[in-house]
Image (tube, rainbow, N blue to C red):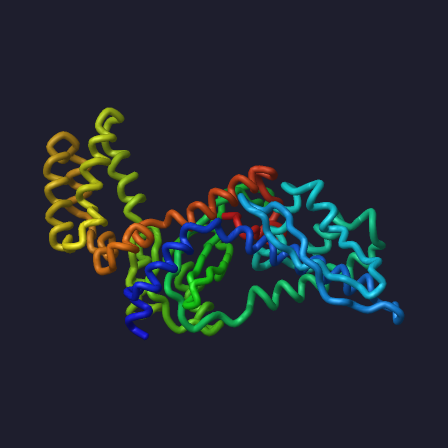
Length: 365
C-alpha cells in the first residue's frame, strides 16, 4: 500500500498522466446536478398516477465544458415524460451551468433551492409541485455532499477560489475551499467545496477533519499553493502525507520582484533550478541551484535575494522524490487552477452573489 500511495508504480504514473490530461471536473458536477434534477422532476411527474411508472433511462448528449457529456434521462412507461431542464439546457446553456454550481454548493438551503427551481420551472409547474421537486432535490444533493469518501486517494489538489459575496448588505470577496482528488482506480472527483470568508490554514484544518469523518484515511500527496501554515495543518490532519508547494506560484512571486526586461531570463534560470526531467537531480542539488540563483539575481535585486535566503525551500522540491514521469504533474496546481478558471468564466455571468447559501457556488470565494 505504501508504494501505491507514493505514486511510484509505472501503472499509476501512466494513469495519473492520462487523468491530468483530461477536461476538468466541472463536467462531472454539471452531469451530476442535471441528472439529479431530471430524476426529481420525473418523481413529481409520476406522483399520484397509478397507471404510469418509471421505466429506466435513456442517454442524451449535451455540450459541457469543452466536450460532450452523457446524461441519464429518466423515462416513463407511457413515454410521455420529457424533462423540462433538458430542453432548457439546450436553449439556455450558460444560465443552467451557473445554476448547477449553485445547486452543488454545500450549505444551500431548501429556500434557496426553491427560488432557483421557481426560476426554472415557474411556467411549467404549480408552486406546490415546484416545492416538492425542490425538497426532493435538496435531499439528494445533501446525501451526495455528505457521502462516504474513499479511504485512500492518490493525490489531492487543493486551492481557494475567491468571489464577491454579500453579507450585511456589503459585497466582499470570500473564499471557497476546493479539493479535487484522484482515486486509486484512477478516476477523479470533486471531494469537497466549502465556504469560509477567508482562506487560512485553520479553515483547511477543519475541512480535512470533516473529510476524515466521511471516511478518509490517507492521501498520497497534497499539492497546493504556498499558504502560510498549511504544512503544519497537513502534518497534523493527514499524517505522513507529502506536501508539494506549487512551483509556479513561487516563480510568479520571484518575477514580481524584478523588472519586466529581466523576467524572461529569470524564468529561464528558474527552470534550470527545477530540472524536473533530470533523473539524477536531487533535492540537495536543487537547493544549491536555488542559492546560486539567489546570489546571481540578488546582486541586482536585493529583495529577491532576501526572499530566496529566507525561503523554506524543502516543500517546493518534494516532486524530486518521485519518478521523472510524474514530476511535472505534481509540482504545480495547474489542474485545479484550470478548474477554477472555468468556474470564474461561468461566474462572470453574475459577477456577485446575494448571499452565502444561494451561491455557495461550488465556485465562489
